[in-house]
Image 1 (cartoon, rainbow over the protein chains, first blue to last red):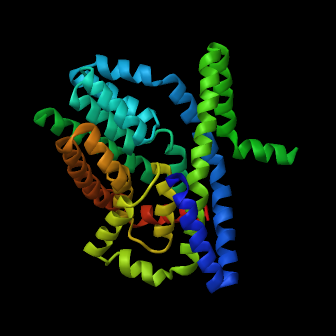
Image 2 (cartoon, rainbow over the protein chains, first blue to last red; image 1 turned 180 degrees about the vertical axis):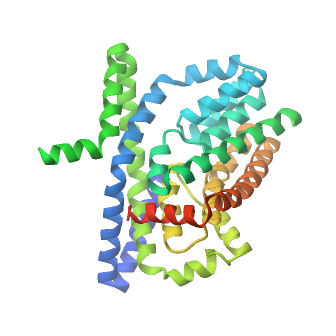
Length: 158
Length: 181
């Protein structure tokens, strides 16, 4: 149900807009269509990249990688896996919780979760297409730094 | 022939990754199959998110005047702009790639670059539904440290990126966005 919440919102807004101003709404739809089509050459390869990376970096492999490595090396592995992998939080969080139960450390999970959410190798192509190479590169660098800070604090605290 | 070359040029990365998937399938048929299925699942979830987001973006483009955006999120909007970026990012749903087109329309309408970068940081850190889920998965301390440390870094980082890019760099970002819409 919540899967389609965005559709309800968009269609509701569309109907309201159409009621208010027909030509404006048709123009808006044209803009939507044009921009989504322009994005396709970047979005479709991303889909394939995610498919490939998820089949190689399966949940079992991620568990092994994050469970085995400890200390700094474990954290580095967790960063890299998090940056390369692409999974929604509702898959990643239970996976992380499960790993904690089986002996993985909090810093490694912190590094994994936050680089997974903020650093996107898979979506880099789309990001570059929007904001250009420099801005995209800088944003991802900041995201890497954010996950390092987070993992370091967790290392000291938990 | 001309069309074919244009098509190959536009979709070269798609073709490269399709070939990569083919090679993976030759190396390990089971991995290749799962990669293919996972790609289909991903396209499915992309279709649940992107079309409505683009409809909303189109409507925003048509209805929200530039002056309004500049007043609320523009260069001199101050703390209000940061707060709006925070609220927009928190109530969002979906993966980070869904945030890029939203960020793009904000920029196009005159929002300040550092605020939009902060919005992307909030989106990747503290989407409200995910925060609750994170607390139940990893505990309150973990989640609080995550949110506070990441948002601090993203806020400072956003300001630093803006000044690193400078006037010229920010202009290039806008040009790149304008080519997409």
